Image (cartoon, rainbow, N blue to C red):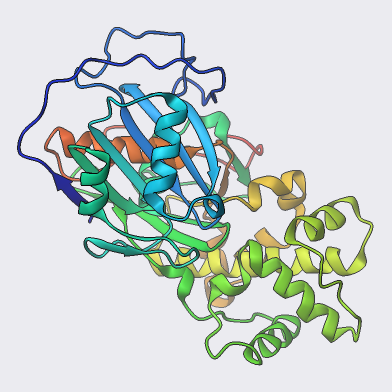
Length: 384
């Protein structure tokens, strides 16, 4: 559940219209800052945030579903979480925030939050008081991303391979970035409910000799090798080093994940090409494991910062072949569609939905099942 902090009293404030020259569009959900809707929230804009291990993304929602003033800040540039929050508010010249929600790449188990992939740690209540918010919700980032799935525009979802979704089927979600996020949606009593998970920390399971060799390389450095250790942005660099050792080659220690991916995509480095192929296969295994664990006949969605940047390569990579290679359950996974989320800031949509449900005294749910299961896809075509 979301950790929530509220004050009993609600101070009166004036609505704020914030001007900025930079904004991001996401279909009808993101709007130009000079567009003033008639249904502005009476208590001012709401603050939304999506915090990963590398970047902190902030935005304002001035009226239902209208999100703008999206700014990305580097986490490393701010000593504390509250410093990044204040920096964003100062940039927007906005002091009229009463309600805020933060989706964070971390378990949320109480008032104290300590990030897994960054040094930030903070008290939710102390942060709320410092920023003088009435409401501050902190939720897992993949819980927020899951909440966005039913309302994502179809043009921001790309299908990889075959399969078709079953109406009201359970939906799985995973995404590689600084870490490996896992979540999903379950239909209960006519509504979508998010699954809170730290599934990225399950033990990594190799599917072939090459991956076993990679795992053995990692065991020399780590007692426990999670799926996240390899199926993530930093994991690509680790795979590269392990494969270089397999080939008795000397890896370029200064080569970053960005460099490895770039060389693989332009076909100039055989070791980088093999590394990216290995990564996509590993991701296929993780996705298939999630599919059979959840019985995800509504589809498996892929978010995070890595896969959307692979472009057309991912569609023809080893990912889908591995996803369908599930032994006696291969026919089961072959029927499940896999879909890449290409929207720029999808977790902000889900975070806005969670905050709105909280403020309207509903439980933390996604949209009603009266809406169709998101993105019913057939085997024809790459896009929904």
